[in-house]
Image (cartoon, rainbow, N blue to C red; front, side, top):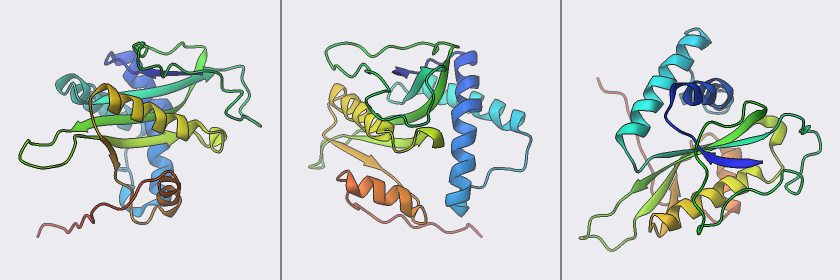
Length: 195
């Protein structure tokens, strides 16, 4: 198993969009009504996400996207955290970047960005976990915990004192997962349509 920072080249981003982003949003749409995808062919959705993500990552150095790849020969049935193999989370060593090996399946990702705090406030900078996803066949393997660990290493590398994330109010499973890992409610977000 490798946790690798995704580069901004077209092939890597297209692969991420097809193998991780689209399945993630299909799953999220089933769990949270507010995440329904536009009624467009998959190829159009993948192309739009590829362009959007490329621009986002290139224009903002504080944004990162980490992907998990595993050897295609590793069967997901009965996978536990011990059989996934070691990942590179040593803060003394730079995390690998680059296109994941084509012989490896992409099975999970986490996106992060820095929420810097102006000096006038008494709080640390925060690392925001924007999205986290684990393919269904790898759920329960400890992989989500490893992604949160990757985010924590990312936070330390960037001098952030806290991790923050948003979870949809109707995504009870995800909320329970995060609360078990020490996340606490911080603020309520309210939205309404503009009329």
